[in-house]
Image 1 (tube, rainbow over the protein chains, first blue to last red):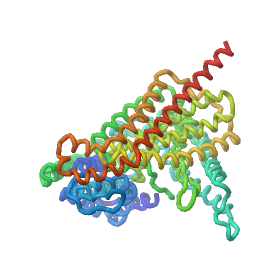
Image 2: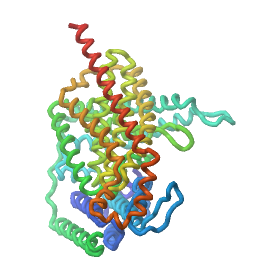
Image 3: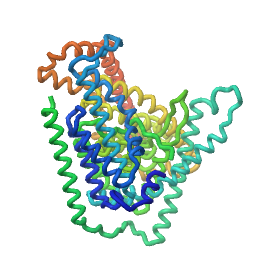
Image 4: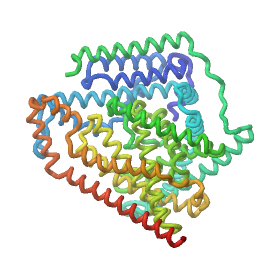
Length: 268
Length: 315
């Protein structure tokens, strides 16, 4: 949360000033391109990564932060690990597990490619959030024809997200403060069931607060003339510069895709 | 903010593009029809409620309790939202939660978001709804129905969403199904218990503090036949397809077999597969799933006979 707000404070250059619709489209384009690239690491991935990093550097987003966010998907990599062993190819080494697990070169390549795709896609999505305000993302979703009702709910949600995040933090803190333990005992709190019930009660009280807050929010909206319709100003047309950037970006993705498939000889 | 990624949100890169696009299409169609339905029936008062409740569910996912050592149970919230709001608003709420997690916190990918929406906003919500209303119907007006139904709904929403997630990974050729289905299913059968316990706790609290929120039968629209049929078909497909998929080698190997270049890769292939087949994982999975189907049939029959009995005593 802090990262988003800190990043948005210096809205002066690069991606910050770009139209949200262009940024959302280009981000999705980058992720689709990386999904379409052949399943082995190669120069095409490097091209995508350098374009991403160049955009980040131009807008003053620290690369270290972006790269750190990119590792978020690492635990999920476990799901792809079997690929390294089940893909047929030249055996590299056999692990003495069961009947022997054989690591193959092609398998290792596929595994690395999945991780690389996840890493690049996460960084692209992180760059979008770091350089785009929430209202601007919502306007872009509106332009992408997401239903109004859904956007209204998401908009309201994003307004109270941090309010309830803070409430949940306070609930956890209060539980922590009241869960003292005598020295020597191994854990605080009662049995597993008791602890689950306490967590459940906290969740319930969070929901109760949300019901009560919703009443107040509705009353406040009503007071300001809410009649079931959320109104917003029409979005300005995209400037010709935005169009050029959009076309250039999509052309770049197309070339990267072609390059990726040509350099690996069209897969196998 | 203390926000940790959830194990069920698939990141980009882990699903193939055809699988991602197909699930986007399904999710858009189903969530779109839910939105159209809500636009007609929803009162203007409920719009802010859904937004604020979505924020609370998002924050509620931070609440956890220690199970043992470093592991902890936490809440996904699909079942709780379904019980409190009814299935269509819950679909919208979970769609908002999943979208915000992907867009603002990079928890779950953007291109694979269709799959994450399908698992959590569609499979999670509708399995919770079907199970909850089944148990409620069985229990009649009894109080235990609320808690037993809440636990069962929470558990099955987690378990079925995890199965759907494993099948998507297998269809994309990322994880072999004979590994992904038992692994995801097994882990989430446990995580589901935690979800169920928290759900009971939350329902108990709300029952004590604001029983009016839970007794609102007007929220629970009568189940029509198409909903039952649709839910039943999805449940049966998932339960039948999982053991089928897990007894087959993964998608890529199947293609390799078809293309005959398995010959060149025979030694590692045959070293690997017996290892997975012989310990009886698919059989175990089969047995579990068969037991699941049997349980489903028994519960359905019991519910139907209970309904029949009541009708007869009334008539």
